[in-house]
Image (cartoon, rainbow over all chains, first blue to last red):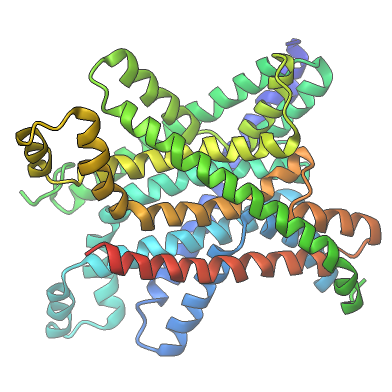
Length: 223
Length: 217
């Protein structure tokens, strides 16, 4: 592979892939907590709307959603999104819907007595959420969130089909230029694998930290 | 371009059925491949010699942690270099089947681990040969338990089938894109396809949830 291609396409491509992953993960976390907590809300309307959101965004394919946001939204509202932001929006909204299920499951897994204790102490619902439920639920969420983050990282490859210059798109260009497929695609697969490995390690460290904040060891169980 | 032209949807319908058929074909064959290969991986995890177990672990981890789209391109462009020619449709089906086999392998692994030790001991006490132990005792119990989880992966596969447009297979999304490219009316075709996915996936996920309640107790 010529050095020019590596410098001008593959390296910036890696950076764009990392940026895409971080931005969409940030949006997905916001959506996941917002929708996940809404599904435990008192009001039936809020619960229904949150459930509706998850079913819609989990039901459709993220690539179809990405195409829809990219091609149809501009026609409907008359404004177009930069491909990068269309991609972040599509990935964040759909992976956020999966994340919402994780948040909901973890909140449900907190012992009911904890919630009742909060009621007994006259905490407001928001105080109960912030001071009692979330701190105990968050360590539970970490392992499935870690899996979801890897899924999201792999999902970013889809943006290359919209012409965003991520590392998959770089591979495509390098293949066109050099006519050598096996080398560049093997390299790109290894790049994704390495990023996934780093993310998994990072999430594990984060899990240990959130558990330590609760006085739990990494393997679970109170000290 | 702001207006929605519903007659365009009527024009799109014949293409829609063609695309749906292709999507379902990829889904069914891909599922069969992923269920079979996944079981092979899962048995590979349990082989006593490391020279089998480690490579199986590494290969499945590698496939699971890298994007399906790049694997799709890899197969599509690299296999011909090695002198293996598949149609785009076959390549897409194989890529999806192999990718998801690494997920079903984890499911089978959990299912096999969940069979109580007593069952193994009973098979030993009856001096069943190893192959009979697997086929008559362990696998029937393990697979019954994991059916809902496998069903979830079929739904996940359904949502990943549109990736084959990247190698120009005319599945649902491919047909929508073709229609949009010809008429410059992406709105209708893409919306119909998006709705179609929800219409298929939502009842399917209700079905899997019902199965979960029945089988996993």
